[in-house]
Length: 605
Ligand code: AGP
Image: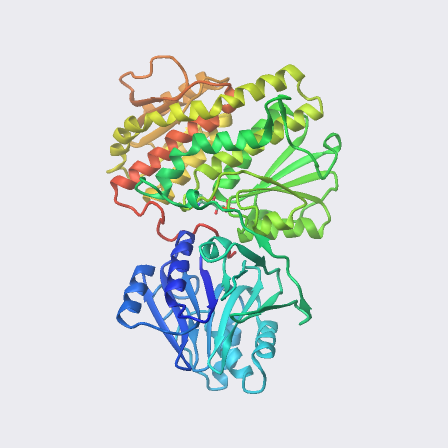
Protein backbone atom coordinates (compact mmCIF):
# COMPACT_ATOMS: atom_id res chain seq x y z
CA UNK A 1 0.00 0.00 0.00
CA UNK A 2 1.20 3.57 -0.50
CA UNK A 3 3.85 4.81 1.90
CA UNK A 4 4.76 8.34 2.90
CA UNK A 5 7.93 9.95 4.17
CA UNK A 6 8.73 13.56 5.04
CA UNK A 7 11.93 15.03 6.44
CA UNK A 8 12.64 18.58 7.64
CA UNK A 9 16.35 19.02 8.34
CA UNK A 10 19.37 21.31 8.24
CA UNK A 11 21.13 19.09 5.67
CA UNK A 12 20.15 17.49 2.32
CA UNK A 13 17.33 15.02 2.82
CA UNK A 14 16.91 13.19 -0.49
CA UNK A 15 19.10 10.17 0.32
CA UNK A 16 17.43 9.67 3.69
CA UNK A 17 14.06 9.85 1.95
CA UNK A 18 15.25 7.13 -0.45
CA UNK A 19 16.45 4.95 2.44
CA UNK A 20 13.17 5.35 4.26
CA UNK A 21 11.20 4.58 1.08
CA UNK A 22 13.19 1.34 0.84
CA UNK A 23 11.87 0.49 4.31
CA UNK A 24 8.33 1.07 3.03
CA UNK A 25 8.83 -1.22 0.02
CA UNK A 26 7.47 -4.15 2.01
CA UNK A 27 4.01 -2.55 1.80
CA UNK A 28 3.87 -3.28 -1.96
CA UNK A 29 4.05 -0.55 -4.61
CA UNK A 30 4.39 0.11 -8.32
CA UNK A 31 5.99 3.57 -8.56
CA UNK A 32 7.97 5.97 -6.42
CA UNK A 33 8.81 9.64 -6.18
CA UNK A 34 10.01 12.51 -4.05
CA UNK A 35 9.86 16.29 -3.97
CA UNK A 36 12.33 18.60 -2.25
CA UNK A 37 12.66 22.33 -1.97
CA UNK A 38 15.77 23.09 -4.05
CA UNK A 39 16.87 26.70 -4.50
CA UNK A 40 13.41 27.86 -3.44
CA UNK A 41 11.65 25.75 -6.08
CA UNK A 42 9.75 22.48 -5.76
CA UNK A 43 11.84 19.82 -7.45
CA UNK A 44 10.08 16.54 -8.27
CA UNK A 45 11.69 13.22 -9.21
CA UNK A 46 9.57 10.18 -10.05
CA UNK A 47 9.78 6.76 -11.62
CA UNK A 48 7.53 3.82 -12.35
CA UNK A 49 8.93 0.68 -10.76
CA UNK A 50 11.38 0.34 -7.91
CA UNK A 51 12.95 2.82 -5.49
CA UNK A 52 16.38 1.83 -6.91
CA UNK A 53 15.29 3.54 -10.15
CA UNK A 54 14.53 6.70 -8.22
CA UNK A 55 17.91 6.44 -6.53
CA UNK A 56 19.62 6.24 -9.96
CA UNK A 57 17.75 9.34 -11.09
CA UNK A 58 18.98 11.15 -7.98
CA UNK A 59 22.58 10.06 -8.58
CA UNK A 60 22.40 11.58 -12.07
CA UNK A 61 20.64 14.70 -10.92
CA UNK A 62 21.18 15.25 -7.18
CA UNK A 63 18.88 17.30 -5.07
CA UNK A 64 20.23 19.40 -2.19
CA UNK A 65 17.00 20.47 -0.52
CA UNK A 66 16.84 20.38 3.27
CA UNK A 67 13.16 19.60 3.31
CA UNK A 68 11.22 17.03 1.29
CA UNK A 69 8.54 14.38 0.96
CA UNK A 70 8.68 10.93 -0.64
CA UNK A 71 6.19 8.28 -1.64
CA UNK A 72 5.79 4.72 -2.85
CA UNK A 73 2.51 4.29 -4.73
CA UNK A 74 0.19 1.31 -4.92
CA UNK A 75 -2.17 2.24 -7.75
CA UNK A 76 -5.85 2.81 -6.97
CA UNK A 77 -6.94 5.64 -9.32
CA UNK A 78 -5.00 5.56 -12.59
CA UNK A 79 -2.51 3.07 -14.02
CA UNK A 80 0.96 2.75 -12.46
CA UNK A 81 3.13 5.15 -14.48
CA UNK A 82 5.33 8.21 -13.95
CA UNK A 83 2.49 10.67 -14.48
CA UNK A 84 0.41 9.06 -11.76
CA UNK A 85 3.34 8.56 -9.37
CA UNK A 86 3.39 10.87 -6.34
CA UNK A 87 4.21 13.61 -5.36
CA UNK A 88 1.61 15.64 -7.23
CA UNK A 89 2.75 19.23 -7.44
CA UNK A 90 1.56 22.59 -8.64
CA UNK A 91 4.03 25.43 -8.87
CA UNK A 92 3.60 26.18 -5.16
CA UNK A 93 2.46 22.97 -3.45
CA UNK A 94 3.53 19.34 -3.52
CA UNK A 95 1.50 16.49 -2.01
CA UNK A 96 1.99 12.80 -1.21
CA UNK A 97 -1.08 10.78 -0.27
CA UNK A 98 -1.99 7.36 1.02
CA UNK A 99 -5.70 6.51 0.86
CA UNK A 100 -8.61 7.12 -1.47
CA UNK A 101 -10.51 10.37 -2.05
CA UNK A 102 -14.01 9.10 -2.74
CA UNK A 103 -15.43 12.38 -4.07
CA UNK A 104 -12.45 13.15 -6.33
CA UNK A 105 -14.54 13.06 -9.54
CA UNK A 106 -16.94 15.64 -8.19
CA UNK A 107 -14.10 17.88 -6.92
CA UNK A 108 -12.23 17.50 -10.20
CA UNK A 109 -15.24 18.72 -12.17
CA UNK A 110 -15.53 21.78 -9.91
CA UNK A 111 -11.84 22.61 -10.32
CA UNK A 112 -11.97 22.06 -14.09
CA UNK A 113 -14.94 24.38 -14.36
CA UNK A 114 -12.67 27.09 -12.90
CA UNK A 115 -10.21 26.43 -15.73
CA UNK A 116 -7.73 24.32 -13.75
CA UNK A 117 -5.94 21.54 -15.61
CA UNK A 118 -5.06 18.05 -14.30
CA UNK A 119 -1.87 16.27 -15.29
CA UNK A 120 -2.62 12.84 -13.84
CA UNK A 121 -5.50 10.38 -13.48
CA UNK A 122 -5.14 10.26 -9.71
CA UNK A 123 -7.56 11.27 -6.99
CA UNK A 124 -4.64 12.94 -5.17
CA UNK A 125 -4.18 15.78 -7.63
CA UNK A 126 -7.46 17.36 -6.48
CA UNK A 127 -5.82 17.87 -3.08
CA UNK A 128 -2.86 19.65 -4.67
CA UNK A 129 -5.11 21.96 -6.65
CA UNK A 130 -7.52 22.64 -3.78
CA UNK A 131 -4.63 23.68 -1.52
CA UNK A 132 -3.10 25.75 -4.33
CA UNK A 133 -6.40 27.60 -4.74
CA UNK A 134 -6.82 28.08 -0.98
CA UNK A 135 -3.31 29.51 -0.67
CA UNK A 136 -4.42 32.53 -2.73
CA UNK A 137 -6.19 33.87 0.37
CA UNK A 138 -4.80 31.87 3.27
CA UNK A 139 -1.68 30.69 5.05
CA UNK A 140 -0.73 26.97 4.69
CA UNK A 141 -2.43 25.69 7.87
CA UNK A 142 -5.73 27.35 7.03
CA UNK A 143 -5.48 26.21 3.38
CA UNK A 144 -4.98 22.61 4.37
CA UNK A 145 -7.83 22.69 6.91
CA UNK A 146 -10.14 24.21 4.27
CA UNK A 147 -9.15 21.52 1.80
CA UNK A 148 -9.56 18.63 4.23
CA UNK A 149 -13.13 19.74 4.95
CA UNK A 150 -14.00 19.12 1.30
CA UNK A 151 -12.52 15.63 1.11
CA UNK A 152 -14.51 12.41 1.52
CA UNK A 153 -12.66 9.14 1.99
CA UNK A 154 -9.41 8.28 3.69
CA UNK A 155 -6.00 9.85 3.66
CA UNK A 156 -2.61 10.33 5.17
CA UNK A 157 -0.92 13.35 3.62
CA UNK A 158 2.50 14.98 3.46
CA UNK A 159 2.55 18.49 1.99
CA UNK A 160 5.32 21.00 1.24
CA UNK A 161 5.06 24.61 0.04
CA UNK A 162 7.32 26.64 -2.24
CA UNK A 163 6.75 29.87 -0.29
CA UNK A 164 6.92 28.39 3.20
CA UNK A 165 10.33 26.77 3.05
CA UNK A 166 10.60 25.36 6.54
CA UNK A 167 7.45 23.36 7.03
CA UNK A 168 5.87 20.05 6.12
CA UNK A 169 2.20 19.57 6.94
CA UNK A 170 0.94 16.08 7.68
CA UNK A 171 -2.71 15.09 8.10
CA UNK A 172 -4.53 11.88 8.83
CA UNK A 173 -8.04 10.53 8.32
CA UNK A 174 -8.27 6.76 8.12
CA UNK A 175 -4.75 6.01 6.87
CA UNK A 176 -1.94 5.78 9.44
CA UNK A 177 0.67 8.50 9.95
CA UNK A 178 3.48 8.88 12.48
CA UNK A 179 5.87 11.67 13.43
CA UNK A 180 9.48 11.04 14.47
CA UNK A 181 11.80 13.34 16.41
CA UNK A 182 15.56 13.82 16.59
CA UNK A 183 17.81 16.65 17.76
CA UNK A 184 18.60 17.92 14.28
CA UNK A 185 15.54 17.04 12.22
CA UNK A 186 11.94 15.82 12.38
CA UNK A 187 10.13 13.22 10.31
CA UNK A 188 6.78 12.16 8.95
CA UNK A 189 6.16 8.52 8.02
CA UNK A 190 3.43 6.00 7.25
CA UNK A 191 4.75 3.78 10.00
CA UNK A 192 7.37 3.70 12.68
CA UNK A 193 9.31 0.98 10.84
CA UNK A 194 10.20 3.45 8.05
CA UNK A 195 11.52 5.95 10.60
CA UNK A 196 13.31 3.53 12.85
CA UNK A 197 16.74 3.91 11.27
CA UNK A 198 16.56 7.67 12.01
CA UNK A 199 14.83 7.82 15.37
CA UNK A 200 13.22 5.77 18.09
CA UNK A 201 11.00 8.63 19.32
CA UNK A 202 7.60 8.49 17.68
CA UNK A 203 4.14 10.04 18.05
CA UNK A 204 1.06 8.82 16.20
CA UNK A 205 -1.56 11.02 14.64
CA UNK A 206 -5.17 10.08 15.40
CA UNK A 207 -7.97 10.43 12.89
CA UNK A 208 -8.63 14.10 12.15
CA UNK A 209 -5.21 15.23 13.46
CA UNK A 210 -2.87 17.50 11.56
CA UNK A 211 0.77 18.32 12.25
CA UNK A 212 3.14 21.05 11.16
CA UNK A 213 6.75 20.03 11.34
CA UNK A 214 9.93 21.97 10.84
CA UNK A 215 13.49 20.85 11.59
CA UNK A 216 13.34 21.92 15.23
CA UNK A 217 9.71 21.65 16.24
CA UNK A 218 6.44 19.79 15.65
CA UNK A 219 2.98 21.18 16.39
CA UNK A 220 -0.18 19.08 16.45
CA UNK A 221 -3.79 20.17 15.90
CA UNK A 222 -7.04 18.25 16.28
CA UNK A 223 -9.91 18.30 13.82
CA UNK A 224 -11.24 21.51 15.41
CA UNK A 225 -7.90 23.26 14.82
CA UNK A 226 -7.14 23.19 18.54
CA UNK A 227 -3.46 22.74 19.41
CA UNK A 228 -2.89 19.40 21.12
CA UNK A 229 -0.03 17.48 22.68
CA UNK A 230 0.93 13.97 21.64
CA UNK A 231 2.45 11.18 23.65
CA UNK A 232 6.01 10.32 22.57
CA UNK A 233 6.61 6.55 22.34
CA UNK A 234 10.11 5.11 22.59
CA UNK A 235 10.44 2.23 20.14
CA UNK A 236 12.06 -1.03 21.07
CA UNK A 237 15.27 -1.98 19.25
CA UNK A 238 14.68 -4.99 17.02
CA UNK A 239 17.25 -4.25 14.32
CA UNK A 240 18.32 -7.88 13.97
CA UNK A 241 14.90 -9.17 13.14
CA UNK A 242 14.50 -6.84 10.16
CA UNK A 243 17.65 -8.07 8.45
CA UNK A 244 17.37 -11.05 6.09
CA UNK A 245 20.82 -12.40 7.02
CA UNK A 246 21.95 -15.28 4.78
CA UNK A 247 18.48 -16.02 3.47
CA UNK A 248 17.59 -15.36 -0.18
CA UNK A 249 14.57 -13.33 0.83
CA UNK A 250 12.60 -12.30 3.91
CA UNK A 251 9.91 -14.89 3.34
CA UNK A 252 12.28 -17.85 3.60
CA UNK A 253 13.82 -16.32 6.72
CA UNK A 254 10.37 -15.83 8.20
CA UNK A 255 9.32 -19.41 7.41
CA UNK A 256 12.49 -20.86 8.90
CA UNK A 257 12.44 -18.80 12.07
CA UNK A 258 8.99 -20.09 13.01
CA UNK A 259 10.27 -22.46 15.67
CA UNK A 260 11.86 -19.43 17.38
CA UNK A 261 8.70 -17.38 16.82
CA UNK A 262 6.71 -20.12 18.51
CA UNK A 263 9.19 -20.41 21.37
CA UNK A 264 9.17 -16.65 22.04
CA UNK A 265 5.41 -16.48 21.94
CA UNK A 266 4.92 -19.52 24.20
CA UNK A 267 7.53 -18.21 26.67
CA UNK A 268 5.80 -14.83 26.79
CA UNK A 269 2.46 -16.37 27.66
CA UNK A 270 3.36 -19.29 29.89
CA UNK A 271 4.70 -19.39 33.40
CA UNK A 272 6.95 -22.45 33.61
CA UNK A 273 7.13 -22.43 37.40
CA UNK A 274 3.40 -22.23 37.98
CA UNK A 275 2.65 -24.22 34.80
CA UNK A 276 0.08 -21.60 33.97
CA UNK A 277 -0.82 -19.12 31.22
CA UNK A 278 -0.09 -15.44 31.94
CA UNK A 279 -3.19 -13.82 30.58
CA UNK A 280 -4.89 -11.37 32.91
CA UNK A 281 -6.95 -8.20 32.84
CA UNK A 282 -9.73 -9.56 30.67
CA UNK A 283 -11.97 -6.65 29.69
CA UNK A 284 -15.01 -8.84 30.51
CA UNK A 285 -15.04 -11.32 33.37
CA UNK A 286 -14.23 -14.62 31.60
CA UNK A 287 -17.17 -16.41 33.23
CA UNK A 288 -19.50 -13.75 31.85
CA UNK A 289 -18.37 -13.93 28.21
CA UNK A 290 -21.38 -14.91 26.18
CA UNK A 291 -19.82 -15.05 22.75
CA UNK A 292 -16.47 -14.40 21.09
CA UNK A 293 -16.45 -12.82 17.66
CA UNK A 294 -13.13 -13.17 15.81
CA UNK A 295 -12.52 -10.73 12.96
CA UNK A 296 -9.69 -10.35 10.45
CA UNK A 297 -8.76 -10.26 6.75
CA UNK A 298 -6.89 -12.72 4.53
CA UNK A 299 -4.46 -14.87 6.45
CA UNK A 300 -5.48 -13.28 9.75
CA UNK A 301 -9.06 -14.40 9.01
CA UNK A 302 -7.80 -17.94 8.47
CA UNK A 303 -6.28 -17.89 11.97
CA UNK A 304 -9.74 -16.91 13.27
CA UNK A 305 -11.23 -19.91 11.48
CA UNK A 306 -8.69 -22.26 13.11
CA UNK A 307 -9.49 -20.69 16.48
CA UNK A 308 -13.23 -21.23 15.99
CA UNK A 309 -12.62 -24.99 15.97
CA UNK A 310 -10.47 -24.69 19.12
CA UNK A 311 -13.00 -22.59 21.03
CA UNK A 312 -15.79 -24.98 20.09
CA UNK A 313 -13.73 -27.98 21.15
CA UNK A 314 -12.38 -26.64 24.44
CA UNK A 315 -14.85 -24.06 25.74
CA UNK A 316 -18.56 -23.53 26.23
CA UNK A 317 -18.34 -20.10 24.62
CA UNK A 318 -20.22 -19.44 21.41
CA UNK A 319 -17.89 -18.38 18.61
CA UNK A 320 -18.46 -16.46 15.42
CA UNK A 321 -15.89 -15.41 12.86
CA UNK A 322 -16.11 -12.66 10.33
CA UNK A 323 -14.20 -11.07 7.49
CA UNK A 324 -13.61 -7.46 8.52
CA UNK A 325 -14.70 -5.98 5.17
CA UNK A 326 -18.07 -7.74 5.58
CA UNK A 327 -18.46 -7.19 9.32
CA UNK A 328 -18.09 -3.43 8.97
CA UNK A 329 -21.17 -3.13 6.74
CA UNK A 330 -23.51 -5.68 8.28
CA UNK A 331 -26.50 -4.86 10.48
CA UNK A 332 -25.22 -6.41 13.69
CA UNK A 333 -26.66 -6.89 17.12
CA UNK A 334 -24.03 -5.89 19.63
CA UNK A 335 -23.99 -7.35 23.10
CA UNK A 336 -21.93 -6.05 26.01
CA UNK A 337 -21.20 -9.60 27.16
CA UNK A 338 -19.59 -10.43 23.82
CA UNK A 339 -15.84 -10.06 23.31
CA UNK A 340 -14.85 -8.78 19.86
CA UNK A 341 -11.35 -9.96 18.91
CA UNK A 342 -9.49 -8.30 16.02
CA UNK A 343 -6.62 -10.21 14.50
CA UNK A 344 -4.04 -8.37 12.40
CA UNK A 345 -0.32 -8.65 11.77
CA UNK A 346 0.18 -5.01 10.84
CA UNK A 347 -2.53 -3.60 13.08
CA UNK A 348 -3.14 -1.07 10.29
CA UNK A 349 -5.51 -2.95 7.96
CA UNK A 350 -8.20 -0.40 7.07
CA UNK A 351 -11.13 -2.87 7.06
CA UNK A 352 -10.15 -4.39 10.40
CA UNK A 353 -9.58 -0.95 11.95
CA UNK A 354 -13.00 0.21 10.67
CA UNK A 355 -14.69 -2.92 12.09
CA UNK A 356 -13.02 -2.20 15.44
CA UNK A 357 -14.25 1.39 15.30
CA UNK A 358 -17.83 0.21 14.86
CA UNK A 359 -17.48 -1.95 17.97
CA UNK A 360 -16.13 0.99 19.92
CA UNK A 361 -19.04 3.16 18.80
CA UNK A 362 -21.37 0.43 20.04
CA UNK A 363 -19.52 0.41 23.37
CA UNK A 364 -18.63 -3.28 23.37
CA UNK A 365 -15.33 -4.70 24.63
CA UNK A 366 -12.56 -5.24 22.12
CA UNK A 367 -9.35 -7.20 22.09
CA UNK A 368 -6.64 -7.12 19.45
CA UNK A 369 -4.23 -9.91 18.54
CA UNK A 370 -1.50 -8.00 16.71
CA UNK A 371 2.13 -8.17 15.79
CA UNK A 372 2.72 -4.44 15.78
CA UNK A 373 1.88 -3.22 19.27
CA UNK A 374 2.40 0.38 18.21
CA UNK A 375 -0.30 0.10 15.55
CA UNK A 376 -3.66 1.85 15.21
CA UNK A 377 -5.62 -1.33 15.98
CA UNK A 378 -3.56 -2.06 19.10
CA UNK A 379 -3.88 1.49 20.33
CA UNK A 380 -7.64 1.56 19.77
CA UNK A 381 -8.60 -1.70 21.45
CA UNK A 382 -9.45 -2.26 25.12
CA UNK A 383 -7.07 -5.16 25.44
CA UNK A 384 -4.00 -6.17 23.41
CA UNK A 385 -2.50 -9.64 23.06
CA UNK A 386 0.74 -9.26 21.07
CA UNK A 387 1.97 -12.23 19.03
CA UNK A 388 5.65 -11.36 19.60
CA UNK A 389 6.70 -12.48 16.10
CA UNK A 390 9.04 -9.54 15.39
CA UNK A 391 8.79 -7.54 12.13
CA UNK A 392 7.35 -9.51 9.23
CA UNK A 393 8.59 -8.06 5.96
CA UNK A 394 7.52 -10.58 3.28
CA UNK A 395 4.12 -9.54 1.94
CA UNK A 396 2.90 -13.12 2.30
CA UNK A 397 2.24 -13.64 5.97
CA UNK A 398 3.90 -16.74 7.46
CA UNK A 399 5.34 -16.39 10.95
CA UNK A 400 2.60 -13.92 11.90
CA UNK A 401 -0.05 -16.53 10.95
CA UNK A 402 1.69 -18.97 13.26
CA UNK A 403 1.81 -16.33 16.02
CA UNK A 404 -1.87 -15.47 15.54
CA UNK A 405 -2.89 -19.13 15.80
CA UNK A 406 -0.74 -19.60 18.88
CA UNK A 407 -2.07 -16.60 20.77
CA UNK A 408 -5.66 -17.55 19.95
CA UNK A 409 -4.98 -21.11 21.12
CA UNK A 410 -3.39 -19.86 24.36
CA UNK A 411 -6.33 -17.50 24.94
CA UNK A 412 -8.72 -20.37 24.33
CA UNK A 413 -6.90 -22.61 26.84
CA UNK A 414 -6.88 -19.89 29.49
CA UNK A 415 -10.58 -19.19 29.07
CA UNK A 416 -11.37 -22.90 29.17
CA UNK A 417 -9.44 -23.20 32.44
CA UNK A 418 -10.95 -20.14 34.15
CA UNK A 419 -14.46 -21.13 33.14
CA UNK A 420 -13.76 -24.73 34.19
CA UNK A 421 -14.70 -25.94 30.72
CA UNK A 422 -11.71 -28.32 30.88
CA UNK A 423 -10.24 -30.14 33.86
CA UNK A 424 -7.04 -28.90 35.43
CA UNK A 425 -5.16 -32.00 34.28
CA UNK A 426 -6.25 -31.50 30.70
CA UNK A 427 -5.20 -27.81 30.98
CA UNK A 428 -1.78 -28.93 32.20
CA UNK A 429 -1.44 -31.53 29.42
CA UNK A 430 -2.30 -28.94 26.80
CA UNK A 431 0.33 -26.53 28.16
CA UNK A 432 2.87 -29.36 28.18
CA UNK A 433 2.04 -30.25 24.55
CA UNK A 434 2.33 -26.61 23.60
CA UNK A 435 5.89 -26.52 24.93
CA UNK A 436 6.88 -29.31 22.52
CA UNK A 437 5.64 -27.34 19.55
CA UNK A 438 8.83 -25.31 18.70
CA UNK A 439 10.85 -28.53 18.35
CA UNK A 440 8.12 -30.14 16.23
CA UNK A 441 8.08 -27.05 13.98
CA UNK A 442 11.84 -27.40 13.53
CA UNK A 443 11.32 -31.02 12.43
CA UNK A 444 8.47 -30.04 10.10
CA UNK A 445 10.81 -27.65 8.31
CA UNK A 446 12.90 -30.65 7.30
CA UNK A 447 10.31 -31.52 4.66
CA UNK A 448 11.77 -28.78 2.46
CA UNK A 449 13.61 -31.14 0.07
CA UNK A 450 10.50 -33.20 -0.61
CA UNK A 451 8.50 -30.02 -1.07
CA UNK A 452 11.03 -28.77 -3.61
CA UNK A 453 10.45 -31.90 -5.67
CA UNK A 454 6.69 -31.56 -5.26
CA UNK A 455 6.81 -27.91 -6.43
CA UNK A 456 7.88 -29.04 -9.94
CA UNK A 457 4.46 -30.68 -10.35
CA UNK A 458 2.91 -27.20 -10.43
CA UNK A 459 4.92 -25.74 -13.26
CA UNK A 460 2.53 -26.80 -16.02
CA UNK A 461 -0.57 -26.91 -13.85
CA UNK A 462 -3.61 -24.84 -14.80
CA UNK A 463 -4.65 -24.65 -11.18
CA UNK A 464 -4.75 -26.67 -7.98
CA UNK A 465 -6.91 -27.58 -5.02
CA UNK A 466 -6.21 -27.83 -1.29
CA UNK A 467 -8.49 -30.09 0.72
CA UNK A 468 -8.89 -30.56 4.45
CA UNK A 469 -11.56 -31.25 7.05
CA UNK A 470 -12.03 -29.90 10.58
CA UNK A 471 -8.94 -28.05 11.77
CA UNK A 472 -7.22 -28.74 8.44
CA UNK A 473 -9.89 -26.92 6.43
CA UNK A 474 -8.58 -23.42 7.34
CA UNK A 475 -5.07 -24.61 6.46
CA UNK A 476 -6.38 -25.69 3.05
CA UNK A 477 -7.67 -22.13 2.60
CA UNK A 478 -4.36 -20.70 3.78
CA UNK A 479 -2.36 -23.03 1.51
CA UNK A 480 -4.43 -21.92 -1.48
CA UNK A 481 -4.08 -18.25 -0.56
CA UNK A 482 -0.29 -18.55 -0.18
CA UNK A 483 0.05 -20.31 -3.54
CA UNK A 484 -2.14 -17.73 -5.31
CA UNK A 485 -0.42 -14.68 -3.91
CA UNK A 486 3.13 -15.94 -4.42
CA UNK A 487 3.02 -17.96 -7.64
CA UNK A 488 0.00 -16.34 -9.38
CA UNK A 489 -1.36 -19.84 -9.93
CA UNK A 490 -5.05 -20.39 -9.35
CA UNK A 491 -5.76 -22.43 -6.24
CA UNK A 492 -8.93 -23.29 -4.34
CA UNK A 493 -9.16 -24.34 -0.70
CA UNK A 494 -12.12 -26.57 0.14
CA UNK A 495 -13.51 -28.68 2.95
CA UNK A 496 -12.87 -32.14 1.47
CA UNK A 497 -16.47 -33.19 2.17
CA UNK A 498 -17.77 -30.34 -0.01
CA UNK A 499 -16.08 -31.57 -3.19
CA UNK A 500 -19.01 -33.67 -4.33
CA UNK A 501 -21.28 -30.63 -4.12
CA UNK A 502 -19.64 -28.92 -7.08
CA UNK A 503 -15.85 -28.49 -7.15
CA UNK A 504 -15.33 -32.12 -8.17
CA UNK A 505 -16.23 -30.93 -11.67
CA UNK A 506 -12.88 -29.12 -11.77
CA UNK A 507 -10.86 -32.30 -11.31
CA UNK A 508 -9.22 -33.53 -14.49
CA UNK A 509 -6.22 -35.68 -15.39
CA UNK A 510 -3.09 -34.39 -13.64
CA UNK A 511 -4.64 -31.53 -11.61
CA UNK A 512 -2.53 -31.17 -8.43
CA UNK A 513 -4.69 -31.73 -5.34
CA UNK A 514 -3.08 -31.21 -1.95
CA UNK A 515 -4.79 -33.34 0.68
CA UNK A 516 -4.24 -32.35 4.31
CA UNK A 517 -5.06 -35.38 6.42
CA UNK A 518 -3.79 -35.45 10.00
CA UNK A 519 -4.58 -38.47 12.12
CA UNK A 520 -7.78 -37.07 13.63
CA UNK A 521 -11.43 -38.04 13.68
CA UNK A 522 -11.77 -37.07 10.02
CA UNK A 523 -8.81 -39.12 8.72
CA UNK A 524 -10.78 -41.99 7.13
CA UNK A 525 -13.39 -39.61 5.74
CA UNK A 526 -10.70 -37.46 4.12
CA UNK A 527 -9.24 -40.59 2.54
CA UNK A 528 -12.64 -41.39 1.03
CA UNK A 529 -12.91 -37.87 -0.35
CA UNK A 530 -9.42 -38.30 -1.76
CA UNK A 531 -10.55 -41.46 -3.56
CA UNK A 532 -13.23 -39.42 -5.33
CA UNK A 533 -10.48 -37.15 -6.63
CA UNK A 534 -8.21 -40.06 -7.61
CA UNK A 535 -11.05 -41.65 -9.56
CA UNK A 536 -11.22 -38.51 -11.70
CA UNK A 537 -7.51 -38.29 -12.42
CA UNK A 538 -6.39 -35.76 -9.78
CA UNK A 539 -2.68 -35.86 -8.88
CA UNK A 540 -2.54 -36.32 -5.10
CA UNK A 541 0.02 -34.60 -2.90
CA UNK A 542 -0.65 -35.95 0.54
CA UNK A 543 0.34 -34.19 3.79
CA UNK A 544 -0.19 -35.95 7.09
CA UNK A 545 1.18 -36.66 10.55
CA UNK A 546 0.00 -40.28 10.33
CA UNK A 547 2.66 -42.95 10.76
CA UNK A 548 0.94 -45.12 8.13
CA UNK A 549 2.77 -45.90 4.85
CA UNK A 550 1.99 -42.99 2.58
CA UNK A 551 3.08 -43.80 -0.90
CA UNK A 552 0.95 -45.97 -3.11
CA UNK A 553 0.33 -45.83 -6.83
CA UNK A 554 -2.41 -43.25 -6.35
CA UNK A 555 -0.41 -40.79 -4.30
CA UNK A 556 2.21 -38.88 -6.25
CA UNK A 557 3.93 -37.38 -3.20
CA UNK A 558 3.61 -37.95 0.51
CA UNK A 559 4.86 -35.53 3.16
CA UNK A 560 4.93 -36.38 6.83
CA UNK A 561 5.15 -33.86 9.67
CA UNK A 562 5.65 -34.79 13.34
CA UNK A 563 2.63 -36.00 15.18
CA UNK A 564 1.59 -34.01 18.27
CA UNK A 565 -1.73 -33.47 19.96
CA UNK A 566 -4.47 -33.29 17.28
CA UNK A 567 -5.38 -29.78 18.36
CA UNK A 568 -1.94 -28.55 17.29
CA UNK A 569 -1.94 -30.27 13.90
CA UNK A 570 -3.01 -27.15 11.94
CA UNK A 571 0.13 -25.36 13.11
CA UNK A 572 2.40 -28.15 11.86
CA UNK A 573 0.49 -28.66 8.59
CA UNK A 574 0.96 -24.98 7.83
CA UNK A 575 4.72 -25.40 7.36
CA UNK A 576 4.58 -27.62 4.22
CA UNK A 577 1.92 -25.47 2.54
CA UNK A 578 4.00 -22.34 3.14
CA UNK A 579 7.10 -24.06 1.75
CA UNK A 580 5.15 -25.34 -1.23
CA UNK A 581 3.93 -21.86 -2.21
CA UNK A 582 7.45 -20.52 -1.69
CA UNK A 583 9.12 -23.14 -3.91
CA UNK A 584 6.54 -22.97 -6.69
CA UNK A 585 7.00 -19.18 -6.77
CA UNK A 586 10.78 -19.55 -6.74
CA UNK A 587 10.68 -21.99 -9.68
CA UNK A 588 8.42 -19.61 -11.58
CA UNK A 589 10.82 -16.73 -10.91
CA UNK A 590 8.23 -14.65 -9.04
CA UNK A 591 9.12 -11.79 -6.71
CA UNK A 592 8.89 -13.63 -3.39
CA UNK A 593 8.84 -10.75 -0.93
CA UNK A 594 6.79 -8.41 -3.06
CA UNK A 595 4.17 -10.30 -5.06
CA UNK A 596 2.54 -8.30 -7.85
CA UNK A 597 -0.49 -6.14 -7.03
CA UNK A 598 -0.27 -6.81 -3.29
CA UNK A 599 0.63 -4.75 -0.28
CA UNK A 600 1.86 -5.72 3.15
CA UNK A 601 -0.45 -3.50 5.06
CA UNK A 602 -3.70 -2.75 3.31
CA UNK A 603 -4.48 0.72 4.58
CA UNK A 604 -7.22 1.48 2.04
CA UNK A 605 -10.67 0.00 1.86
C1 AGP B 1 -1.28 -12.73 3.75
O1 AGP B 1 -0.34 -13.51 3.11
C2 AGP B 1 -1.78 -11.62 3.00
N1 AGP B 1 -0.79 -10.86 2.39
C3 AGP B 1 -3.00 -10.88 3.55
O2 AGP B 1 -4.06 -11.75 3.38
C4 AGP B 1 -2.98 -10.36 5.01
O3 AGP B 1 -3.01 -11.44 5.90
C5 AGP B 1 -4.21 -9.45 5.21
O4 AGP B 1 -4.11 -8.36 4.36
C6 AGP B 1 -4.37 -8.98 6.63
O5 AGP B 1 -3.27 -8.24 7.06
P1 AGP B 1 -3.06 -7.89 8.58
O6 AGP B 1 -2.81 -9.18 9.30
O7 AGP B 1 -1.87 -6.98 8.61
O8 AGP B 1 -4.31 -7.23 9.07
